[in-house]
Image 1 (tube, helix red, strand yellow):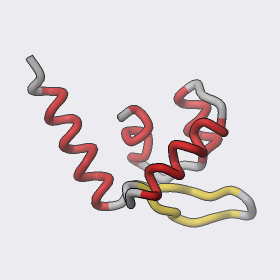
Image 2 (cartoon, rainbow, N blue to C red):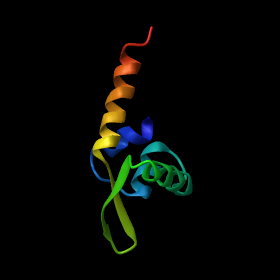
Image 3 (tube, rainbow, N blue to C red):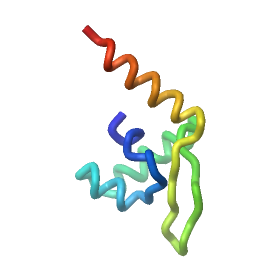
Length: 73
């Protein structure tokens, strides 16, 4: 969920890795999984840097996770 929350604005894998304290390769793998399930999409690229953002489906999942977390006993 932490990674999904970071996509409030489009970001590249290096920004995400820095914010999460992870190596970019780990973030790259997680982005690949999120893209596979249409939760994240490419927003644009600048040279070799690709910006990612949540899809509508990703936003709905994040909303569901937040709601579930907020209502947990």
